[in-house]
Length: 310
Length: 325
Image (cartoon, rainbow over all chains, first blue to last red):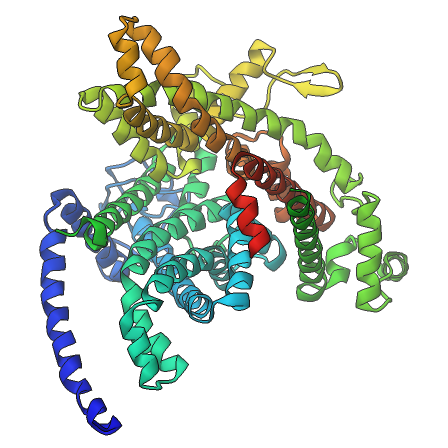
């Protein structure tokens, strides 16, 4: 049998793989929906994403348009009415902003920064982890030393160090969050890639004399995705929490990009006079976001764990 | 063994050198050192004199050597805000941070182990389920927000605890300690609980998992069969055996507590080194920032080194693997 006829077999193979992919997707969906709590959490999370994306359309007011806010409406408690008759369901802050609208806009910033940094860290971490696992030897031990070293420092400390040197700003906090997260992805990818590497299909790909790049990205990568998705969801929740913590400390996002952490910090000043709502509601929004992502992540881990597969 | 320790020591040294390079070039290349190291309120003449005095007219690598030489002698320059040696200012704040971190550590053990033990012994009772639910919440709650809410409830609404600061402290053997006075204790309570919250959740989960494993062991069954009282079985036979892994993990978390005290100290205006660094970043007090970063790197490298060596003593596989690699 010549080499060309062997290669001609591949389209059939890939069609089969696609078919199996469909059924496994269906199984994945039915496994996931078994846990009602996780489904509820997913609904809540999707609602939060919807609110964040369409914040400018569904908010009662644009909280950062100076024409729409009036300082005379400042620090009103929840469910009070403005002078023009609109109701502030969650009260207003010191500038007279509707807290509900401010939270919608804050969710957009927090989720945006969290998702963006998570995605870039995932790409970088995956490439590095795959490189380590595929080449092994010195490259592997050097990369893993670096990963171990970074993971021995608490995340908040690394972010603090970077931001102390870099200063404030959206792109700077994204850099800091990427620097904190890449190592988790790299370690996860390397672990599962090492297992996959020794399997027959990789050897088959080698025998077909595919380039290293093709084997790594077309054959190895799709098979290490499941654990990566689980780590990804948990990491996005972590990134959102870390960003809000840093913003609260005043070293994260600038005041022009108010995330939930900044809203909470803003209300902190008025806490001692009993005006709880300015800090309370953004915190609740943050909590709901993080808990819903974590619950979805937990269920994903159970569903994607091959050891628990029935 | 000694090969392992020497290798680890060399690695730690390399990390410190690498971090000093990053911090030094971060401050000098990304930011303009003239803006950063010299008081912005100086006039032109003072400015030029200061540039000469700081050696900023030298090439960069020479400047780095000077920085290292000074740092080794404990000289990180003077704080702009306080006008004192940066290193000394930070060292002064260390006891407050350590007091907070250790109190939180002890609290997480005192609260976490009994709750975890209960949840492990009676896994199906509704109290246990509540404990486990609470521990999940403990992992998800943002520390700073919980701190703010605690101030709201206990200081503003109920007025039973002071909201901020450290309170009255006693000086014992040159160390300022506040948990020996009633006022100091009242100030310490809320920040310590806030800092401990995450670790309490961790200890609960560890203890519960350990307990569920140990109660099935033969020696526990035998102790019961011998007719020992339930209390004795739990306190001696169960607790003793789950304590070792729990205490190990908790010891490892000390570094984490010191890092996270940055958040708690800011919320409760606790005068530790975490609050100092946040204030310094906001006031662009760069000598303190540089000194803090170097001290914290040194501290963590030391903690990691000690942990690695302890592990290699406890588990010979660790060092054998390393020598092979």
